Image (cartoon, rainbow, N blue to C red; front, side, top):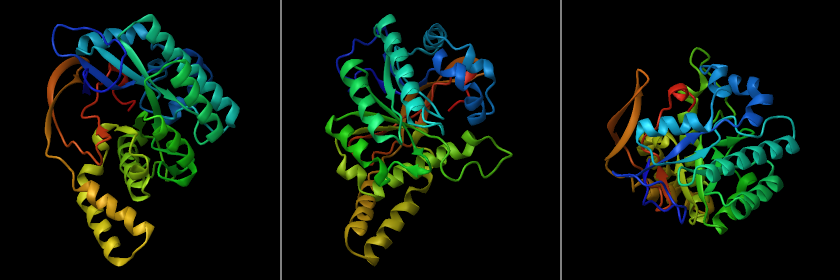
Length: 314
């Protein structure tokens, strides 16, 4: 959650008598996206019933925002995103459908919604075109990425062209987890429970170790779920970077040294006012959360706004 004064530019955010809160982790389910892909969505998050996707509406989102005291929601697509295994053109179409739906929500409810646009990675050409359309034509607020695509984490060279373009645009990038190359290795527990926060840790480490964060310092990254499992293992990663620095020279060692420096900026915990769901009822709570700034341009969303049927959608 970010205070409304956070740097989200010129959009006229909703007014409120008390503190204004922007929910940066808020998913939408456009009907033209859900209809033909329902089986794929259920497979990705087996704990959610089909009705969680098919009954969602913008009005439902507004009702839940009112209950939780949220002035504005920056919406995005959740896992599995828009790129499946059926080629580039269907993925491009899904991204366009979702982004235009989000843009219509923004127009229909001024000040209540913004959007991190979906792009069809790992399709580089299609992603560059959709970035241009989403940011220049639809005037959306940033770009939404998943932690990995086709088994590759975001620090992979395959995504360098897209990330360099986002850096050129000084874009805000919301990163949401998905299943990486390993899949769900513990079938007794749904994938999002363990694999999602783990993939977030993997991709942040990947971005740092490959030097991508240093190269793309003008991107404002926002990572889901408080950085996933990374805060609990940050000292192990920092130790690894020190060992790597001592054991070698060159570009790889320099990148690892950057991670050591970035990891050292692990801040003490901050109290953040959030809202959670308990028995289907919104309750205010102070979220005592590790707030990690790997660079000045990195934020971890400090708590999740759980919307009724989305409690396990992550």
